[in-house]
Image (tube, rainbow, N blue to C red; front, side):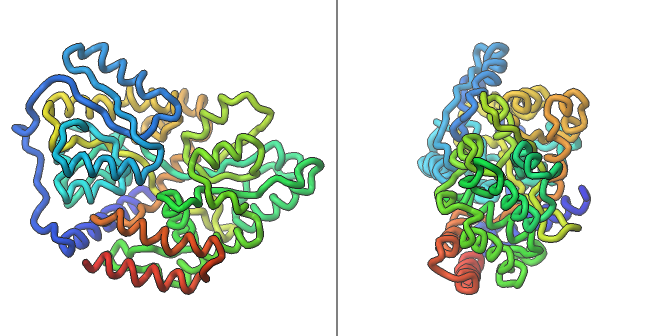
Length: 430
């Protein structure tokens, strides 16, 4: 499985190379030059909002040992789209305000192609310790531009207490079984108004992720990783979109979920409004910490057939160094620290972030503390990357523009797929 997924990631990266060449970014990507990493002193670390409030504790560990090379945390919006825009604006002004940056792995090609982030010395990093599909997210044209510091695979959170009351001792293997379980739970006394399922369906990056997962779960693709061409006009992709839109029509996905982002959906689940939730691993520790009578467990995303598994989008963040950072020597050392086993363990224990090192999923102490780790590893190994293209911002916007009206019931599946095919073909061709 690992070799297969590594091949998928490499092919997807090849597709992004073809796209970059057709988008005005010709020529070979620059390689790392040791002479570029000069300058020591204070730096910044930039990321999205730290909902758990634990990142500063990790930075404190660095700062305690580097009194002359302090790292200051800069927190951006909770929304991925706004984080990306803030980083782009900083780069376009060639500001040194942002030094090291936590970038969504689908931004790597765009940031590297525009020379907003620097190539990194691969030989100074422990490549063999990383999950191979995860390591490949930091590559652009065969060069390393970002180092994964947190992976992500979707998990299905489910109310194990309610399923037990309804006569089930397992998670749903298929979407049809999930529907049956919802019906059984709603028949329980006092649960008549509970909603069945939610993901992140507001018109933002979460919608792209959830659509991408539905398409891959149905056996389809948005962009063919072999050719780099648009592949969303297929029976499988239609089936994936119909799955989501039909669940909205039937009320299995509540209308309010069309406004949900990650935190909205987490709060809905933790407040007892949902039987099932698709979300990232970070939810696990937050939900366990909350004083509540709700009992839950996690499982992989269901498949469409009993002998299939649902496909997660390969999420996660990589740390990169801004081209305009002044103290690049310090920045490189910080990148090594932030992607070390020590840092990985800290973030796993404090924020439930998915590790990028294989060994941490197999550590007995970790599994005892985080029983979901084997499930999460399976999710990541079975995950697919979102379209890895240089103009990803335009591509994800096109996906959201086509899919959201369909979930609202304002357009049909065939029309949405036709619109999306036309738009993506234009974007990738240009």
